[in-house]
Image (cartoon, rainbow, N blue to C red; front, side):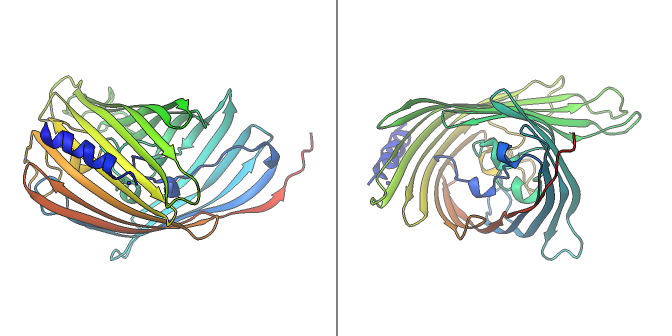
Length: 377
């Protein structure tokens, strides 16, 4: 309890120090703009990455991810409310002679009410705006594509993202199980005065099963949630500190499977973040994590109570308690080029262990106008 209080004091001490990591440079967002009616564009989503985890504990993998992703695509907006986008996604990991992944991308999007419906390749990964215990940032580098159905509302006062990501398809007689994930990410601005007050709510679920397979494995269903509150304040452009933000979440895990396959049936945790943005493009974020028997099917390995690493797959730490400090330098070279560097040390309180990771990321996202197709109706 004393450590808990000291950490809160430390967080607020950073002021003259978004609590979740600013991953906007990784978002792949294609809005439908009325002025682009009948326009054909060619675009590129490219990411060069190098992430090195200097981890030696029994919970999270120490590894290096080094390579690039390349996603060229064409997009055509048929009228004011309907857009088609298609292309190819390629990933190359350095040190591997072959491409790690080659996959088509195709999205149909339609303006609906105050939001958009997307079918096909989703605006997934970091675009869901999930906190790290629910979504591992490394998934951007190793398992980025999501395909299914999505509904999004993005306004200054409201963010809603509902999605279904169909991960594994089965056919009659397959000795495998279908896998589907999905969730809802919600953020509502409650107050916008000197301070902003927001209410974030995040729910994610994962199901593995099916009725036409021959797999002997039982049905598995897992659920995670994060309910929190966020406070933020912006300062004048002349100020070195441009903004301050604090977020606090209660995290929850529940196993709804017919037969228990994982170590714990349920668990929970507390996740606190405080961060600052500066005019020199440096963000500093301090995080505190305390959990009891918490698991997440898509969350970061550091936050789990069961080992996810190859050499110690059965290690269990019912209680986890971490202090994390992140230094993020986000540089916008142009409207389409973003360079991000990160240094993320953490201290494992329960094990008295200090470790760190660091990364370099280059995002290039241009879009080129090709032509405007005449409407012959």
